[in-house]
Image (cartoon, rainbow, N blue to C red; front, side, top):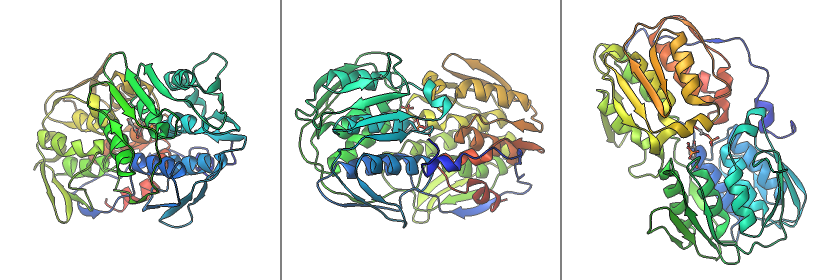
Length: 436
Ligand SMILES: O=C(O)C1=C[C@@H](OP(=O)(O)O)[C@@H](O)[C@H](O)C1
Ligand SMILES: C=C(OP(=O)(O)O)C(=O)O
Protein backbone atom coordinates (compact mmCIF):
# COMPACT_ATOMS: atom_id res chain seq x y z
CA UNK A 1 0.00 0.00 0.00
CA UNK A 2 2.65 2.51 -0.96
CA UNK A 3 0.69 4.34 -3.65
CA UNK A 4 -1.32 6.62 -1.35
CA UNK A 5 -0.16 10.19 -0.83
CA UNK A 6 0.50 9.64 2.85
CA UNK A 7 2.63 6.58 2.39
CA UNK A 8 5.38 8.52 0.68
CA UNK A 9 5.87 10.61 3.80
CA UNK A 10 7.33 7.59 5.60
CA UNK A 11 10.68 7.43 3.85
CA UNK A 12 13.65 5.67 5.42
CA UNK A 13 14.57 7.60 8.57
CA UNK A 14 17.55 9.92 8.21
CA UNK A 15 20.36 10.35 10.74
CA UNK A 16 19.24 11.35 14.25
CA UNK A 17 18.46 15.07 14.32
CA UNK A 18 20.50 17.32 16.64
CA UNK A 19 17.69 19.01 18.55
CA UNK A 20 18.32 22.77 18.70
CA UNK A 21 19.19 24.09 22.17
CA UNK A 22 17.51 27.18 23.66
CA UNK A 23 20.43 29.10 25.13
CA UNK A 24 18.27 32.19 25.77
CA UNK A 25 14.64 32.65 26.77
CA UNK A 26 12.68 32.09 23.56
CA UNK A 27 10.34 34.89 22.52
CA UNK A 28 8.11 33.98 19.58
CA UNK A 29 4.64 34.08 18.12
CA UNK A 30 3.60 31.09 16.04
CA UNK A 31 0.73 30.10 13.76
CA UNK A 32 0.16 26.37 13.84
CA UNK A 33 -1.41 23.98 11.30
CA UNK A 34 -4.96 22.75 11.74
CA UNK A 35 -6.24 20.07 14.07
CA UNK A 36 -5.98 16.45 12.97
CA UNK A 37 -9.05 15.46 14.96
CA UNK A 38 -11.22 18.26 13.56
CA UNK A 39 -9.99 17.80 9.97
CA UNK A 40 -10.58 14.05 9.87
CA UNK A 41 -14.03 14.30 11.46
CA UNK A 42 -14.98 17.05 9.00
CA UNK A 43 -13.83 14.92 6.06
CA UNK A 44 -15.88 11.91 7.19
CA UNK A 45 -18.99 14.00 7.79
CA UNK A 46 -18.53 15.75 4.43
CA UNK A 47 -18.32 12.40 2.64
CA UNK A 48 -21.65 11.40 4.23
CA UNK A 49 -23.35 14.77 3.78
CA UNK A 50 -26.29 15.75 1.59
CA UNK A 51 -24.24 18.08 -0.66
CA UNK A 52 -20.76 19.47 -1.37
CA UNK A 53 -18.72 20.73 1.60
CA UNK A 54 -15.65 22.83 2.19
CA UNK A 55 -13.16 22.22 5.00
CA UNK A 56 -11.20 25.44 5.36
CA UNK A 57 -7.60 25.52 6.58
CA UNK A 58 -7.60 21.73 6.63
CA UNK A 59 -4.53 20.11 8.14
CA UNK A 60 -2.31 18.74 5.37
CA UNK A 61 -0.41 15.89 7.02
CA UNK A 62 0.02 12.15 6.71
CA UNK A 63 -3.09 11.27 8.78
CA UNK A 64 -5.36 13.67 6.91
CA UNK A 65 -3.97 12.73 3.48
CA UNK A 66 -4.67 9.11 4.32
CA UNK A 67 -8.24 10.02 5.32
CA UNK A 68 -8.77 11.96 2.09
CA UNK A 69 -7.38 9.01 0.08
CA UNK A 70 -9.59 6.53 1.96
CA UNK A 71 -12.79 8.50 1.31
CA UNK A 72 -11.81 9.04 -2.32
CA UNK A 73 -11.27 5.29 -2.68
CA UNK A 74 -14.79 4.66 -1.35
CA UNK A 75 -16.36 7.01 -3.92
CA UNK A 76 -16.29 10.59 -2.56
CA UNK A 77 -14.45 13.37 -4.40
CA UNK A 78 -11.92 15.15 -2.17
CA UNK A 79 -9.98 18.03 -3.70
CA UNK A 80 -6.96 18.71 -1.49
CA UNK A 81 -5.13 21.00 -3.91
CA UNK A 82 -5.72 24.24 -1.97
CA UNK A 83 -5.79 25.26 1.70
CA UNK A 84 -9.56 24.80 1.68
CA UNK A 85 -10.44 21.20 0.86
CA UNK A 86 -13.59 20.56 -1.17
CA UNK A 87 -15.54 17.35 -0.68
CA UNK A 88 -18.31 16.09 -2.93
CA UNK A 89 -20.08 12.99 -1.63
CA UNK A 90 -20.34 10.16 -4.15
CA UNK A 91 -22.04 6.82 -4.49
CA UNK A 92 -20.24 4.32 -2.29
CA UNK A 93 -20.26 1.46 -4.76
CA UNK A 94 -16.76 0.22 -5.43
CA UNK A 95 -14.20 -2.21 -4.11
CA UNK A 96 -11.38 -0.28 -2.45
CA UNK A 97 -8.18 -0.61 -0.46
CA UNK A 98 -7.71 1.68 2.52
CA UNK A 99 -4.22 2.41 3.86
CA UNK A 100 -4.63 3.37 7.52
CA UNK A 101 -0.92 4.19 7.90
CA UNK A 102 -0.62 4.70 11.66
CA UNK A 103 -3.78 6.83 11.87
CA UNK A 104 -6.24 5.64 14.51
CA UNK A 105 -8.87 7.94 13.04
CA UNK A 106 -8.64 6.25 9.63
CA UNK A 107 -8.64 2.68 11.00
CA UNK A 108 -11.61 3.37 13.34
CA UNK A 109 -13.70 6.03 11.52
CA UNK A 110 -13.68 4.63 7.96
CA UNK A 111 -15.04 1.05 8.50
CA UNK A 112 -18.49 2.33 9.63
CA UNK A 113 -18.59 4.41 6.40
CA UNK A 114 -17.49 1.38 4.37
CA UNK A 115 -20.49 -0.47 5.82
CA UNK A 116 -22.70 1.85 3.73
CA UNK A 117 -20.95 0.82 0.51
CA UNK A 118 -21.83 -1.99 -1.87
CA UNK A 119 -18.12 -2.64 -2.45
CA UNK A 120 -15.64 -4.81 -0.56
CA UNK A 121 -13.29 -2.45 1.33
CA UNK A 122 -9.96 -3.92 2.44
CA UNK A 123 -8.08 -2.18 5.28
CA UNK A 124 -4.40 -2.44 6.22
CA UNK A 125 -1.70 -0.10 7.47
CA UNK A 126 1.81 0.27 8.85
CA UNK A 127 3.25 -2.82 10.56
CA UNK A 128 2.58 -1.41 14.06
CA UNK A 129 -1.00 -0.58 13.11
CA UNK A 130 -1.80 -4.31 13.16
CA UNK A 131 -1.19 -4.15 16.94
CA UNK A 132 -3.50 -1.20 17.61
CA UNK A 133 -7.00 -2.19 18.79
CA UNK A 134 -10.03 -2.01 16.50
CA UNK A 135 -11.87 -5.25 17.44
CA UNK A 136 -14.73 -3.55 19.35
CA UNK A 137 -15.59 -1.43 16.27
CA UNK A 138 -15.65 -4.50 14.03
CA UNK A 139 -17.78 -6.47 16.50
CA UNK A 140 -20.16 -3.52 16.81
CA UNK A 141 -20.48 -3.27 13.03
CA UNK A 142 -21.38 -6.94 12.86
CA UNK A 143 -24.03 -6.43 15.54
CA UNK A 144 -25.43 -3.52 13.51
CA UNK A 145 -25.75 -5.66 10.37
CA UNK A 146 -22.44 -5.26 8.50
CA UNK A 147 -20.33 -8.18 7.26
CA UNK A 148 -16.70 -7.93 8.38
CA UNK A 149 -14.00 -10.44 7.53
CA UNK A 150 -11.06 -10.14 9.93
CA UNK A 151 -10.01 -13.77 10.08
CA UNK A 152 -10.98 -13.75 13.78
CA UNK A 153 -8.07 -11.41 14.58
CA UNK A 154 -10.05 -8.34 15.66
CA UNK A 155 -7.25 -6.33 14.06
CA UNK A 156 -5.84 -5.24 10.70
CA UNK A 157 -5.95 -6.51 8.00
CA UNK A 158 -9.73 -6.83 7.58
CA UNK A 159 -12.38 -6.38 4.89
CA UNK A 160 -15.76 -4.70 5.29
CA UNK A 161 -18.41 -5.96 2.85
CA UNK A 162 -21.34 -3.56 2.94
CA UNK A 163 -24.72 -4.08 1.31
CA UNK A 164 -25.38 -0.43 0.53
CA UNK A 165 -27.41 0.10 3.70
CA UNK A 166 -26.89 -0.62 7.41
CA UNK A 167 -29.83 -1.55 9.66
CA UNK A 168 -28.18 0.04 12.75
CA UNK A 169 -29.79 0.07 16.20
CA UNK A 170 -28.46 -0.55 19.68
CA UNK A 171 -24.98 -1.90 20.32
CA UNK A 172 -22.95 -2.51 23.47
CA UNK A 173 -19.16 -2.31 23.35
CA UNK A 174 -16.15 -1.88 25.61
CA UNK A 175 -14.57 1.46 24.68
CA UNK A 176 -12.04 1.51 27.52
CA UNK A 177 -9.30 0.98 24.92
CA UNK A 178 -10.08 4.09 22.87
CA UNK A 179 -12.72 6.81 22.64
CA UNK A 180 -12.37 6.47 18.87
CA UNK A 181 -14.46 3.27 18.97
CA UNK A 182 -17.46 5.37 20.02
CA UNK A 183 -16.73 8.34 17.76
CA UNK A 184 -16.44 6.00 14.77
CA UNK A 185 -19.96 4.61 15.18
CA UNK A 186 -21.50 8.00 15.95
CA UNK A 187 -19.99 9.70 12.88
CA UNK A 188 -21.66 7.31 10.42
CA UNK A 189 -24.68 6.43 12.60
CA UNK A 190 -27.10 9.05 11.25
CA UNK A 191 -26.90 7.32 7.87
CA UNK A 192 -27.92 3.96 9.32
CA UNK A 193 -31.60 3.00 8.89
CA UNK A 194 -32.34 3.08 12.63
CA UNK A 195 -29.47 5.37 13.59
CA UNK A 196 -27.19 4.03 16.29
CA UNK A 197 -27.47 3.77 20.06
CA UNK A 198 -24.00 3.07 21.49
CA UNK A 199 -23.61 1.87 25.07
CA UNK A 200 -20.26 1.45 26.75
CA UNK A 201 -19.72 -1.41 29.21
CA UNK A 202 -16.27 -1.61 30.78
CA UNK A 203 -13.63 0.46 32.57
CA UNK A 204 -13.94 4.24 32.05
CA UNK A 205 -13.73 5.53 28.47
CA UNK A 206 -10.57 7.61 27.92
CA UNK A 207 -10.32 10.86 25.99
CA UNK A 208 -13.97 11.88 26.55
CA UNK A 209 -13.38 15.38 25.11
CA UNK A 210 -12.85 13.68 21.77
CA UNK A 211 -16.34 12.12 21.97
CA UNK A 212 -17.72 15.56 22.91
CA UNK A 213 -16.00 16.89 19.78
CA UNK A 214 -17.76 14.23 17.68
CA UNK A 215 -21.14 14.99 19.24
CA UNK A 216 -20.70 18.75 18.79
CA UNK A 217 -19.72 18.37 15.13
CA UNK A 218 -22.67 16.07 14.41
CA UNK A 219 -25.07 18.57 16.00
CA UNK A 220 -23.58 21.40 13.93
CA UNK A 221 -24.58 19.41 10.84
CA UNK A 222 -28.15 19.02 12.06
CA UNK A 223 -27.81 15.49 13.41
CA UNK A 224 -29.77 14.70 16.57
CA UNK A 225 -27.57 13.18 19.30
CA UNK A 226 -28.67 12.19 22.80
CA UNK A 227 -25.74 12.07 25.23
CA UNK A 228 -27.70 12.82 28.42
CA UNK A 229 -26.69 9.58 30.15
CA UNK A 230 -23.12 8.62 30.97
CA UNK A 231 -21.72 5.89 28.75
CA UNK A 232 -24.53 6.11 26.20
CA UNK A 233 -24.70 8.05 22.94
CA UNK A 234 -27.69 7.80 20.59
CA UNK A 235 -27.66 9.22 17.07
CA UNK A 236 -31.04 9.57 15.33
CA UNK A 237 -31.27 8.57 11.66
CA UNK A 238 -31.36 11.49 9.24
CA UNK A 239 -29.38 13.60 6.81
CA UNK A 240 -25.99 15.14 7.55
CA UNK A 241 -26.01 18.74 6.35
CA UNK A 242 -23.13 19.81 4.11
CA UNK A 243 -20.33 21.63 5.98
CA UNK A 244 -18.52 24.90 5.58
CA UNK A 245 -16.09 24.83 8.48
CA UNK A 246 -12.77 26.43 9.34
CA UNK A 247 -10.43 24.10 11.20
CA UNK A 248 -8.94 25.43 14.46
CA UNK A 249 -5.17 25.14 15.01
CA UNK A 250 -4.13 21.81 16.56
CA UNK A 251 -3.91 22.60 20.27
CA UNK A 252 -2.25 19.30 21.17
CA UNK A 253 0.48 20.05 18.65
CA UNK A 254 0.86 23.44 20.34
CA UNK A 255 2.25 21.45 23.29
CA UNK A 256 5.94 21.44 22.31
CA UNK A 257 5.85 25.13 21.33
CA UNK A 258 4.32 26.20 24.64
CA UNK A 259 6.72 23.86 26.43
CA UNK A 260 9.56 25.76 24.79
CA UNK A 261 8.50 28.87 26.70
CA UNK A 262 8.31 26.77 29.86
CA UNK A 263 11.82 25.28 29.60
CA UNK A 264 13.57 28.44 28.40
CA UNK A 265 11.90 30.95 30.72
CA UNK A 266 10.69 32.75 27.58
CA UNK A 267 7.32 33.70 26.14
CA UNK A 268 5.58 31.90 23.28
CA UNK A 269 2.26 32.98 21.83
CA UNK A 270 0.12 30.63 19.73
CA UNK A 271 -2.13 32.65 17.42
CA UNK A 272 -5.83 31.88 16.86
CA UNK A 273 -6.27 29.89 20.09
CA UNK A 274 -10.06 29.43 20.28
CA UNK A 275 -11.97 30.98 23.21
CA UNK A 276 -14.07 27.88 23.37
CA UNK A 277 -13.19 24.48 21.93
CA UNK A 278 -13.71 20.74 22.26
CA UNK A 279 -10.00 20.06 21.62
CA UNK A 280 -8.20 18.15 24.37
CA UNK A 281 -5.14 20.37 23.94
CA UNK A 282 -6.95 23.26 25.63
CA UNK A 283 -6.05 21.48 28.91
CA UNK A 284 -2.47 22.68 28.38
CA UNK A 285 -3.55 26.01 29.84
CA UNK A 286 -4.24 24.46 33.26
CA UNK A 287 -1.32 22.02 33.09
CA UNK A 288 1.25 24.73 32.35
CA UNK A 289 -0.23 27.00 35.01
CA UNK A 290 0.12 24.16 37.54
CA UNK A 291 3.76 23.79 36.53
CA UNK A 292 4.47 27.44 37.31
CA UNK A 293 4.00 29.15 33.93
CA UNK A 294 2.02 32.36 33.43
CA UNK A 295 -0.75 31.66 30.93
CA UNK A 296 -3.11 34.17 29.38
CA UNK A 297 -5.65 33.93 26.58
CA UNK A 298 -6.13 37.21 24.73
CA UNK A 299 -6.81 38.72 21.33
CA UNK A 300 -3.32 37.77 20.11
CA UNK A 301 -3.79 34.12 21.06
CA UNK A 302 -2.53 32.03 23.97
CA UNK A 303 0.56 33.47 25.64
CA UNK A 304 2.69 31.27 27.90
CA UNK A 305 5.67 32.58 29.91
CA UNK A 306 7.96 30.12 31.63
CA UNK A 307 9.32 30.67 35.13
CA UNK A 308 12.59 32.61 35.57
CA UNK A 309 15.37 30.07 35.85
CA UNK A 310 13.97 27.88 33.06
CA UNK A 311 13.31 24.17 33.23
CA UNK A 312 14.57 23.47 36.77
CA UNK A 313 12.24 26.19 38.07
CA UNK A 314 9.21 24.26 36.77
CA UNK A 315 7.07 22.66 39.46
CA UNK A 316 6.35 18.95 39.28
CA UNK A 317 2.68 17.92 39.10
CA UNK A 318 0.36 15.09 40.11
CA UNK A 319 -2.05 14.79 37.20
CA UNK A 320 -4.72 12.41 35.95
CA UNK A 321 -4.38 12.64 32.16
CA UNK A 322 -7.14 10.09 31.38
CA UNK A 323 -9.16 12.66 29.40
CA UNK A 324 -6.17 14.12 27.57
CA UNK A 325 -3.80 11.17 27.14
CA UNK A 326 -2.32 12.51 23.90
CA UNK A 327 -0.66 15.31 25.92
CA UNK A 328 1.35 12.82 28.01
CA UNK A 329 4.62 12.78 26.00
CA UNK A 330 5.21 16.54 26.13
CA UNK A 331 4.03 16.81 29.73
CA UNK A 332 6.35 13.93 30.69
CA UNK A 333 9.27 15.72 29.04
CA UNK A 334 8.53 18.82 31.13
CA UNK A 335 8.20 16.73 34.29
CA UNK A 336 11.57 15.05 33.62
CA UNK A 337 13.17 18.51 33.61
CA UNK A 338 11.18 19.98 36.52
CA UNK A 339 12.65 20.81 39.92
CA UNK A 340 10.22 18.66 41.96
CA UNK A 341 8.65 15.19 41.54
CA UNK A 342 5.67 14.39 39.33
CA UNK A 343 3.16 11.63 38.96
CA UNK A 344 1.21 11.20 35.71
CA UNK A 345 -1.78 8.85 36.08
CA UNK A 346 -4.81 7.39 34.32
CA UNK A 347 -3.20 6.74 30.94
CA UNK A 348 -2.83 2.95 30.63
CA UNK A 349 -4.64 3.23 27.27
CA UNK A 350 -1.77 5.17 25.67
CA UNK A 351 0.19 1.92 25.59
CA UNK A 352 -1.99 1.28 22.49
CA UNK A 353 -1.25 4.60 20.81
CA UNK A 354 1.36 4.98 18.05
CA UNK A 355 3.69 3.01 20.31
CA UNK A 356 3.51 1.90 23.95
CA UNK A 357 4.02 5.49 25.07
CA UNK A 358 4.58 4.72 28.75
CA UNK A 359 7.32 2.18 28.01
CA UNK A 360 8.84 4.41 25.32
CA UNK A 361 8.88 7.53 27.51
CA UNK A 362 10.34 5.67 30.49
CA UNK A 363 13.04 4.14 28.31
CA UNK A 364 14.02 7.21 26.29
CA UNK A 365 13.83 9.80 29.08
CA UNK A 366 15.73 7.32 31.27
CA UNK A 367 18.43 6.97 28.60
CA UNK A 368 19.00 10.73 28.86
CA UNK A 369 19.43 10.48 32.64
CA UNK A 370 15.87 11.18 33.80
CA UNK A 371 14.81 9.51 37.06
CA UNK A 372 11.60 7.88 35.82
CA UNK A 373 9.58 4.81 36.79
CA UNK A 374 6.96 3.24 34.54
CA UNK A 375 3.69 2.45 36.35
CA UNK A 376 0.87 0.30 34.96
CA UNK A 377 -1.16 3.45 34.22
CA UNK A 378 1.40 6.26 34.14
CA UNK A 379 4.85 7.53 35.05
CA UNK A 380 6.65 8.71 38.18
CA UNK A 381 9.35 11.30 37.57
CA UNK A 382 11.84 12.74 40.05
CA UNK A 383 14.30 15.61 39.54
CA UNK A 384 17.60 14.61 37.90
CA UNK A 385 20.37 16.11 35.79
CA UNK A 386 19.79 15.06 32.19
CA UNK A 387 22.51 14.59 29.57
CA UNK A 388 22.74 14.23 25.79
CA UNK A 389 22.20 11.08 23.77
CA UNK A 390 19.91 9.57 21.13
CA UNK A 391 16.16 9.84 21.86
CA UNK A 392 14.29 7.18 19.87
CA UNK A 393 10.78 7.92 18.61
CA UNK A 394 9.23 4.59 17.49
CA UNK A 395 7.40 6.23 14.55
CA UNK A 396 5.46 8.30 17.11
CA UNK A 397 5.08 12.00 16.33
CA UNK A 398 4.51 12.86 19.99
CA UNK A 399 7.65 11.01 21.08
CA UNK A 400 9.53 13.34 18.71
CA UNK A 401 7.81 16.31 20.39
CA UNK A 402 8.99 15.06 23.79
CA UNK A 403 12.54 14.63 22.45
CA UNK A 404 12.85 18.13 21.06
CA UNK A 405 11.52 19.68 24.27
CA UNK A 406 14.24 17.91 26.27
CA UNK A 407 16.75 18.85 23.57
CA UNK A 408 15.89 22.53 23.97
CA UNK A 409 17.01 22.33 27.60
CA UNK A 410 19.86 19.79 27.48
CA UNK A 411 23.03 19.78 25.34
CA UNK A 412 23.60 17.01 22.81
CA UNK A 413 20.13 15.45 22.38
CA UNK A 414 19.71 13.69 19.02
CA UNK A 415 16.12 12.90 18.01
CA UNK A 416 15.80 9.82 15.86
CA UNK A 417 13.38 10.06 12.88
CA UNK A 418 12.11 13.56 13.58
CA UNK A 419 10.30 13.27 10.21
CA UNK A 420 7.74 11.06 11.94
CA UNK A 421 6.12 14.33 13.05
CA UNK A 422 4.63 14.49 9.51
CA UNK A 423 1.82 12.31 10.89
CA UNK A 424 0.09 15.46 12.11
CA UNK A 425 2.43 18.41 11.46
CA UNK A 426 4.02 19.23 8.10
CA UNK A 427 7.60 20.50 8.33
CA UNK A 428 7.70 20.35 12.12
CA UNK A 429 11.52 20.37 12.35
CA UNK A 430 11.72 23.51 10.20
CA UNK A 431 9.03 25.28 12.26
CA UNK A 432 10.83 24.29 15.46
CA UNK A 433 14.28 25.36 14.21
CA UNK A 434 12.99 28.80 13.24
CA UNK A 435 12.36 29.54 16.93
CA UNK A 436 15.81 28.56 18.19
O1 LIG B 1 -10.82 10.97 18.12
C1 LIG B 1 -9.73 11.50 18.02
O2 LIG B 1 -9.47 12.36 17.14
C2 LIG B 1 -8.67 11.14 19.00
C3 LIG B 1 -9.02 10.49 20.15
C4 LIG B 1 -8.01 10.10 21.17
O3 LIG B 1 -7.78 8.71 21.02
P1 LIG B 1 -7.87 7.66 22.27
O4 LIG B 1 -9.25 7.70 22.80
O5 LIG B 1 -7.51 6.36 21.63
O6 LIG B 1 -6.87 8.14 23.28
C5 LIG B 1 -6.71 10.85 21.00
O7 LIG B 1 -5.73 10.35 21.85
C6 LIG B 1 -6.26 10.81 19.55
O8 LIG B 1 -5.06 11.49 19.37
C7 LIG B 1 -7.29 11.50 18.67
C1 LIG C 1 -3.18 8.78 19.64
C2 LIG C 1 -2.93 9.57 18.60
O1 LIG C 1 -3.27 9.33 17.31
P1 LIG C 1 -4.32 8.39 16.58
O2 LIG C 1 -5.33 9.33 15.96
O3 LIG C 1 -3.53 7.66 15.55
O4 LIG C 1 -4.93 7.47 17.60
C3 LIG C 1 -2.21 10.85 18.78
O5 LIG C 1 -2.16 11.63 17.81
O6 LIG C 1 -1.66 11.12 19.86
